[in-house]
Image 1 (cartoon, rainbow, N blue to C red):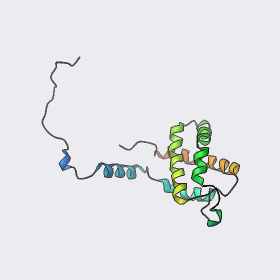
Image 2: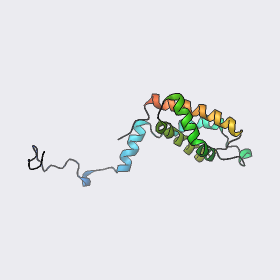
Image 3: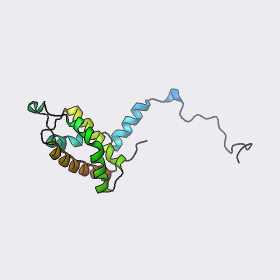
Image 4: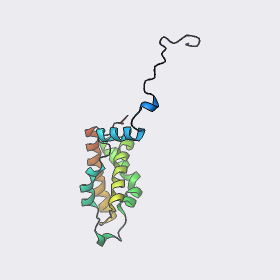
Amino acid sequence: ELRGISPCVTTQEEVDSLPSLKKTLREHYERKRRHYGIDRQLQYDPDLKRLFSAMPSNATKPSAASFLNRFRREVRRKVASWTGEYQYTIDQVLEDMIRRCRELDLRVPVTEEQAKLDFTLLLTVHTMNFLRSGRHRVAL
């Protein structure tokens, strides 16, 4: 439909030429992530430390991050069915929690069944907080 028609507005003006930009794309997105609170995984630490353990006496126990990765699909589906939220949204919270477990080197000090139940409740609460806070929006 527009083939052969000249544009209504033409200009040679450069909006933001590359040499004039003072910050990198990484800096731009880091600032946006800070502004929107996307990198707030530290908020999970107290609950994760209550559920799992970093004590040297539990060093032989299974890694919490590995446990959660094995249990990931099951817990994501359960929380999605109870909350009515998309599995993708739940997976964002779950990924952050797994990352924190790995960084804190947390271990599973209780039975697997007890850990599954407790973590399912914990993930449900944090998913609802995540949604209520508006943190699930994309920072552009």
